[in-house]
Length: 430
Ligand code: GDP
Ligand code: IMO
Ligand code: MG
Image 1 (cartoon, rainbow, N blue to C red):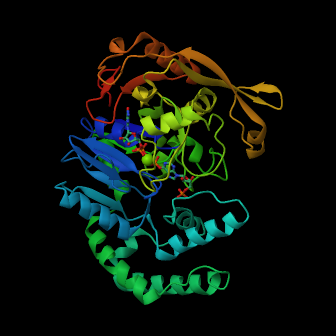
Image 2: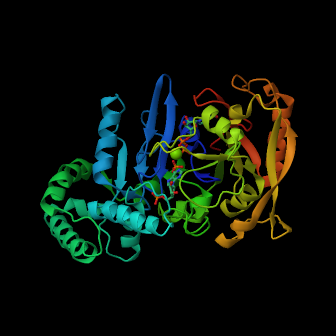
Image 3: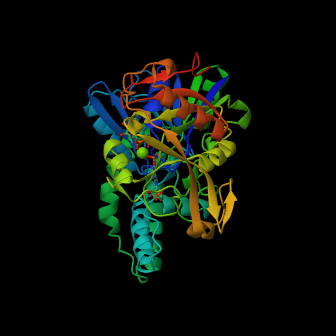
């Protein structure tokens, strides 16, 4: 079997979309397993730039089935828009499959996301969500009241559930201050999207397992990143799904025994969007430099990303939880031209040096990163196509990174384009 899982090692936006697209040249199926259209995965394909939110990043390689697995929360209106946009750009969307077990994001989930965030903001406690209804949709799933993809197949029953749940939302939340939903208008918006998505609904647990058992090269595409994981992230400043490797099994219906390789996508520095702890965040000119040079603005919401140095403490913890076999290091080129590059190798908490990532949010309020200064490199890495072609100090930086996080480097990315990538191992999906 060949089932590769690819996850983000930091706070998301590591460049997962680009690496998935590169790996898809050899893949035979690509599957999203969690999250929803909170994700923004950028793929630069020739002169074209695509930002994918729900559709797997393998879609730009014709003939590769792209599956939205059962662990994903799907907004039918947004999925229709994304698929139509791709189709209008000449992309073949006929291979898309949507799980009958996925949870659907309904209009009240989006209103609840906004209501929860504005209520929390009044107390200075907002999460800074993408406002796509992700958290409320997963809340309904766990409460066992969610509407699933398969229910689209029976529109009459669907409409009844829609009206009942919409009314329940209006009764429960509008008196508390949430926006009232005009149910007839909301149904009118939703119905064409349901009709559009209907032909793509499948029992994807079966199609994914059949592909894996037939020896097809299956690539499981994570969204967000380790520290946004609902269990392992910087709770409560997280998303509402398991973004780590474990989520790849529950979100597809594949057994853990099926997974043959884990890829961890890791940015050569760190970024975060939204609120929450970020030990190596920079508030100075260097932070601004990374943001500008790295184009660090959210692919989904356009918000400026918070930027900082590479955090080896956090990434070592992340590689452990994810069981990373190989790293795909991205955005090395953004560090070109610096005299010194800093790497965080420990945390000082209450005067003590700590080398494990703390579980408690309170530990972050008195956290000071312990940095090591590494010599930078003046040369551009953008045209390097092998490890040996990189400046010596860039090689040393990568070697140090791999040693600190306890994982091997398999791929290096030195620019947003497909060809600005090289592998250090043969047959990447082996
Ligand atoms: P994802 O959410 O993990 O897929 O990442 P995003 O697409 O949100 O953000 C990554 C950004 O960096 C995108 O604009 C990519 O085009 C870009 N990118 C990816 N790899 C590289 C790289 O190696 N160098 C540079 N300069 N940009 C990259
Ligand atoms: P990709 O897949 C970066 C962040 C939001 C917020 C928190 C919760 O492109 O890496 P949510 O809307 O999920 O309830 O928001 O998670 N967040 C992301 N940050 N990249 C993402 O996805 C993200 N998806 C959600 O900014 O802090
Ligand atoms: Mg992104």
